[in-house]
Length: 339
Image 1 (cartoon, rainbow, N blue to C red):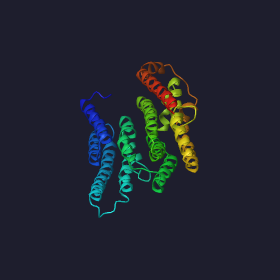
Image 2: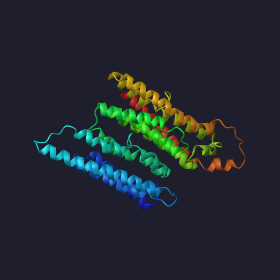
Image 3: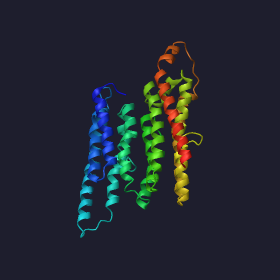
Image 4: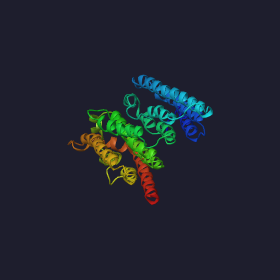
């Protein structure tokens, strides 16, 4: 939690904008909540410690402003067609999906997402991958149905998220492309007309926050910096478990929402799509295993001066990781009993 009063106020207005958007009973109120959310997040992105934040915040503002203005135009057109019986309202819901997909970073409208992630610190990256996706996904749940157009966006997100992370050495970009791949699973849950996407998003948020907590504590941004965790074997085991869980390996918590989605797709006669999604998820496991390579497979010598660092550096984070893990276990137990 930041100790700066301005950041606390901006975080409160950011969350309030999301709540206004998802609880509104009109599209105009939902648009207003999106704007409050955007104007609260832009000042949080700006910091003097990173030279890329200005570019990232400007790019994010332009993309979100484009999506908001397009959404506002389509909302007005939808209101006109509803009150004018002479006009035909056939594809308004499909058109309204496009700015929401742009705001979420769904492929092929994802080009801004990895570059914006690269210019942010880890706290803002966690907000961008979790809180900033709640309102667009909730609004998409009102519009999205399993049609050919939605299938194109789902397959494009799965393939782009799987292939885009190759040849990347920045962990921020790897997590960004992984988020695009996870969005394809959430879009299937949205199109199925159930609230399974809330389960998926909750578990995804827990895993992302725990991973970013470790990376932020060790000030890690690139794969070759992961050897700084060599003096903390307990942290390495937790980090490996979280990454494999994020990849959806069956014994871990991250496989539970994918298991529910695979079962739902098979019941709805979408076996081919489920096979493609599983193959793309297996490709994303390559990223996480490559991230773990520097930490787990390189021999190192533990020196005495690391003992002080081991005692003082990771004390608070251990408690936070235990909290995240316990929350995930309780959540998984409730979901298994529910389904």
